[in-house]
Every structure is written in C-alpha cells, then in structure tokens.
Amino acid sequence: MFLNIHAEQSWLGLPEDEIHAHLMGINCSLTYLFQLRLPRKRILRIGARPTEVFSPGHYLYVGSAKRASGHRLWRHWHGSERHRWHIDYLRAAAFPERLILFRSEEVGECSLAQQLQSDSRFRVVPRFGSSDCACQGHLWLIMGNDHSMGIEVPSFLSLS
Image (cartoon, rainbow, N blue to C red):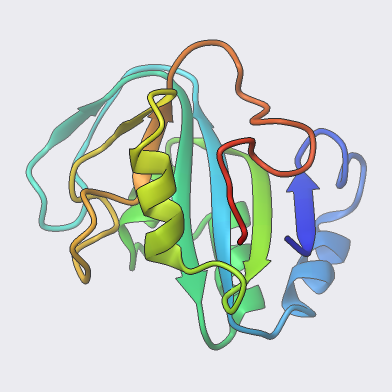
C-alpha cells in the first residue's frame, strides 16, 4: 500500500482544488479499493444492466488504472456527470469514504477481488465492475458494523 485516503481524516477541510491537485499528481499503474456509503435504498440502472436494488450501507469497489490514474481517482472521488464505468452510476447516489491505493505490481485487481470474495464480511454484487474478467464482481456490500476495515490495511489483505 502506498496511500490511504480517508474522507474524514486525510482531506478534512481541504479545498477541492487541493484534493484535485493531490490526486492528479498520481501517475502510475495502480489497484485501488474505493469505499462508498449509500445512505438509503436506491433502485439504480447500471449501464446496460437490468435495474437493481441497492441496500443502504457501505460498499467497497475494487478497480485499477494503468494510464491517467489520478484522473480516474478524481473522477471516482468527486463524481462525474458522464457515466462511463459501472462505479460512476453508483457514485452518483453514494458518498466517498475511503480510497486505498496499491501499486499494481504489488497486488492486482482480480487477486484483490478474490480475497474479498472469500471473506464473509463482504457480500458481492454479482458482475458489477467485472464485465471484462472472470471475477464474480468487483463491488461488495460491507456486512456488519465494522466499516473501517482496520487502521491502515484491510485485515483480509495479503500483499505477499
């Protein structure tokens, strides 16, 4: 892990332009965990997928970026009018809480998704964000009350 950004701690009180500059300064291949909070039940149409019901709660999305990684992170954190990826549709209804970044050579998107898949604290949203791979999904609802996922690195994560 090389960066752990938490909405309530790291960027508390920072102007949007400083957050933007910080993220836009990141330009390497990376894998990321993006935690969002959906305050109430929502019925959403995600791209070409059928309409789905999303329960209120905290969600964890696994993604990766090879080029313009800072731009993609800013888009996810700030939201975007234009919906390009599955996460853009959910982000329009949810609030960002946490962003944990890993260098792609340390941990890959699908290997991180498989670790989440095997942990009972998370319930997968089938095929969300995984249309280009064999994973069951890249979005999970965090079950229970522990939404912090540990202090620095999620306890389920193995970087070896």
